[in-house]
Image (cartoon, rainbow, N blue to C red; front, side, top):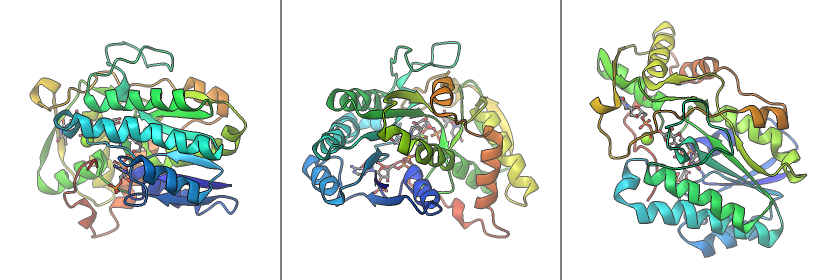
Length: 305
Ligand SMILES: NC(=O)C1=CN([C@@H]2O[C@H](COP(=O)(O)OP(=O)(O)OC[C@H]3O[C@@H](n4cnc5c(N)ncnc54)[C@H](OP(=O)(O)O)[C@@H]3O)[C@@H](O)[C@H]2O)C=CC1
Ligand SMILES: Cc1cn([C@H]2C[C@H](O)[C@@H](COP(=O)(O)OP(=O)(O)O[C@H]3O[C@@H](C)C(=O)[C@@H](O)[C@H]3O)O2)c(=O)[nH]c1=O
Ligand SMILES: [Mg+2]
């Protein structure tokens, strides 16, 4: 099976490359800028037509949550119009699409984990543009699987785990919000799930699914776990000071409840992600090979332009 993934450096893309390398029957092609630029519909159509995949994984997106509040047009063009271009290109060659979306499509006002059919009312520009990406895909092709995931981290790209390990190398105490709850999800687990459902998706099962790490936590509990594992493995350690969202002002107001119910995915595909702690441990240990902490250098967070 030939799978085209949009983007080349993203967390999910790199995780798919790593996992697909273990699967002889999967040929994975990654295409990013400049050949495939979500802001340039013609480039998307050409790149996808040239690659002739059996399935498209739409993983590239504008993911800089705060910056999106300052450049909503660009976020919209890349996420919403870009997704429509990918879906149109998929229709032209007659193949299905697996599209990544986010917990931030929800307001966070609900007091239980969100289900797929709950009302999506985003509070941020990023969340709004991702919701629009879902609508764009669904209106262009019935052959779609939309995977909403959350709080993604991995050994690749920029993410919360890397940020925390860097901060632990710089200070004794890190202040982290404790009133936003969600499901940390390893991009490597997302890759495993996508590669598992790829053959099934070609045969149907279309629709929206939630896919996230098993178990819930808030950002400060997530940080504490990262520091504990790192400290035990000989990496940087810091104490966590729990603060509220009000004490950590950001341009984009994150949902207080980001938890996703993954029941539908588990029932349909017979797969559930590992406990979030186990997956975090795996990534933290990969990031701290003895004596090498250079992976934690400050990085541009998110993408988008
Ligand atoms: N990160 C997270 O916490 C979460 C992510 N998601 C969703 O999952 C998907 C994957 O996220 P993740 O892997 O973390 O993303 P990353 O931020 O790690 O990577 C984003 C990718 O998108 C590419 N990209 C950005 N703009 C364009 C453009 N105009 N044209 C082509 N490619 C572009 C980037 O390319 P380049 O390398 O060239 O910059 C990069 O490869 C996204 O759809 C995201 O919305 C959902 C929930 C949580
Ligand atoms: C760095 C830092 C962050 N925080 C807070 C800010 C925020 O509420 C939370 C997480 O910070 P981040 O900037 O990593 O989070 P954020 O960029 O909002 O992460 C989101 O990215 C997009 C792409 C998604 O789709 C979401 O699922 C989610 O993963 O932690 C602290 O409290 N202290 C800190 O030192
Ligand atoms: Mg961020």
